[in-house]
Image (tube, rainbow, N blue to C red; front, side, top):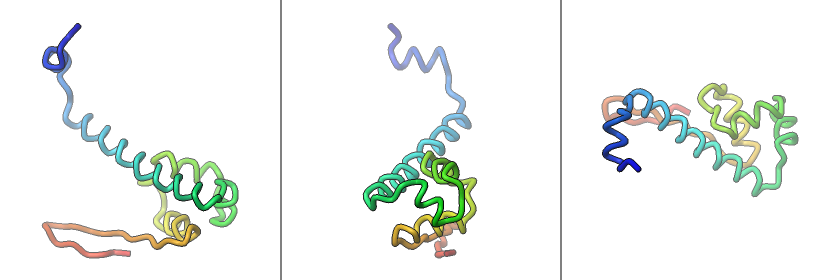
Length: 100
């Protein structure tokens, strides 16, 4: 059995792939929180989709981490349907401001 050091030496990682995987994992974690909130409010994907005028499949994709490809308006409606407010924060060169 290989030690972690031996494994990393034998199979070096690509930093770009590691970063891409990290982004996917973070998106899935954020989406999971949306799904859990929807369930706590006892709203089904179908009910939410009807309220937002999107397909149930679109709700499912959002809840499985496909947030970055979603339109801001769809995400805003999703959050507002659960009684929340969508915030979009921007940070450039250490300067932060709220976009939406």
